[in-house]
Image (tube, rainbow, N blue to C red; front, top):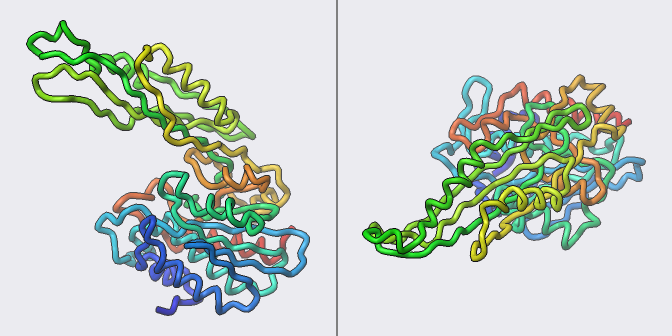
Length: 358
């Protein structure tokens, strides 16, 4: 397969057609590696299913352009379809449109005004401990060095700054088994969930303003599991809770707050386990590269309400933003798609940056 050139819609469609659900990105990575290998101005390193390509021109600035190669499971939305200037298909917005923009920029900019690092990494759509970017940080952090990182997450071609952090916990409440005919002899763990679920449903999320951007936290029960048999009072009930927190809190502060919120519902014998924790990222709007990118291209700036790998780059000391084609509200849905206008808008802004730098 030869990836088309000069047509972002065609290129996006071809990338979407290569299925790359998390942990099965290999064929797409092989394809991208072959494309990059044909570009003599780039040095290419492959670490597992992660690719890093770099220019080495001695410029004063290094821009990192990154994107993940995996998608969520296919939902009867492959192969890709081209309808009225939009590519429909699994991963079109999240984020094969962004990968198409990256590949086309890599081809065109043989001598960019800045040095560029292109990162194509695996396993972003699954738990953080599987992340291909985390793998690169562990094995080759030198490859991720830069002044600013721009991740091609879907933002409709505007800038989404910072990101919210994530905590996922599992709380198991204990009870005592008994026959339902003699329920008073036991304690129903499911019933213990009642007050907690009411508190979660009535929770009013914080909406702090940070760098002029409004963030919106969340606290949600995502799974409930319990039950032994139809005639048994359950002695255990499990609830999984997800907390999205704004970047004015560290992950430690957010965890302390969540434990405090849950404390009134926890008794001796209950168990609280932290399943996943990811830091938030402060908006990098004051960085001169970000300011120039926004001002020269008339980009709208919004807060990023989800979590993205801008947090990993922020922890590395690299200012990072989200900027990519596609509508994030369509990501992971059967109706996922990306438009020509969104692809072109993203390409134009990044092309201008690589052409002129600061």
